Image (cartoon, rainbow, N blue to C red; front, side):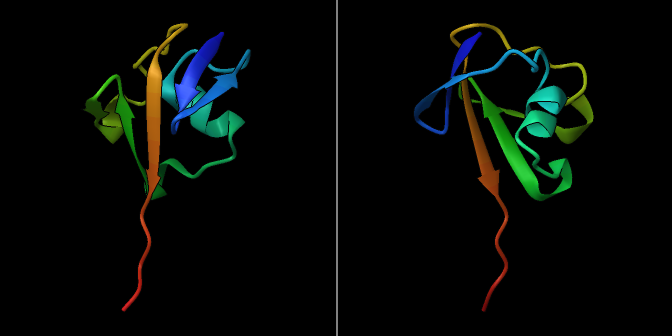
Amino acid sequence: MKILLNGEDYDTKAASTVSELLAALDINPLRVAVELNLVIVKKVHYDSTPIYDGDTVEVVNFVGGG
């Protein structure tokens, strides 16, 4: 399946949900926000939110600092 991930083409075979995509990318789901086709996905819905061929996904990391 091909998706647009953070503005770049990305091929994934292992991901059919937001949670599976984050796991395939080795990203801690507690430390990011995910936007799927211009809609923010709530963390409680990561497991049940499907990703389809052609979808646009933005994964934003939280960064602390001062």
